[in-house]
Length: 546
Image (cartoon, rainbow, N blue to C red; front, side, top):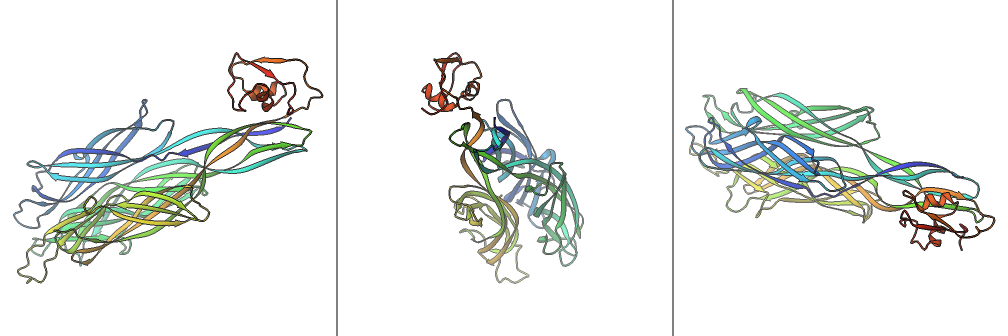
């Protein structure tokens, strides 16, 4: 009798599901407080509310709202700057619903949605037409429990072979929100504020600390304000830009804390922080108040190291029967992250106004296009769209004769300009071709510098995180037994009528023989052969090889 210790190996295979893209179209009404639109400069959408439920039919039913921010040139203005900003939020935002078919036989551990494209065009009278694209990324996994022998009390003359398996286990997925408010000063040398046109907020430098029972996410919010200035007489002047970031000490710190009993320091945190909604208001000309809602998602992952028995052998005078099973296992190789700078020189397309001053720089979420594992490193390619809002250059004109500069926007998202492409690699000793890598990108900040009137240098700070895995086929021992050596072969023929629930292994145990001997006696293909209830099975006279 062999003393086996049994266990369950919990394995999960990540499914490489391509993002599902939802198109949202709607008509919006411009409020009476805004002049009519002549030209759209920049439109940006934010998913302020979104929920999803799995239906009985195997679909993911989504519903939510899109908050829309617009910067535009007005058709007619009596006085002042012709550029305005409008925001549709709350009940004025765009509602949407959609259904996504889920992959079969998969456990959906989560999903993430982000707006990858927003367009707004003037419609009839005081309406505008919105068209946006939402990318839905599913964290789909196929999970199963494999019965295995994890330990064997070894007797004299019996040897075991073991192998270590490292699989990834998702401990918890944490989601939480945090509301932030902050007052910014517009004191000298900044121009006083007449009205807010637009605002951009961006979470940067997010880091996660895991302690027993608690997960803490810290970071900063960088803020860019686009506004119309005011002179000493109270008249509107040009568009002005104020920036509060880490370098000038103006970034707003934030912290989101999760109480999670299963959290331990040895776990890995995959964290993403996004802006869900924000608003900038100005109580008077030298200050403004920011109200923002942040959402954090943290996936706690722990490598599970299990020692599996893969073979059991015995000396010649002893017989060991081994029940094996072959399994495809996605084994965790490692994970690494790296911060890097993506620097690109962008030229204005033909016909665009020359650049005098950069006002805003914006980008769509960076996406991984391809990822390949090479010897000791992971190579990946990515892309993102880019939009620049700027005022034109007038050249050498007398200051008294200088007209108000024109505001223009140029984007590198669609043809002919195309998206901004980049490539990078992560050093990861021990990885090899044939392994699989999942690379996710997190934006860490963006700046733009004017080279000349038709050339702009953009620097996008990114954090790349690569998780490498290897698919292996393992023959694992599910059970084993010591078979007594018979003094002499069984006399006569013995048949067994197969009952429901019987397996070759259970029948072999009942008659103190081996599965191999049953297969030889009944001309079966192997240990995995199907046995049908009601059929007769010949019990061999001896478990020894013929």
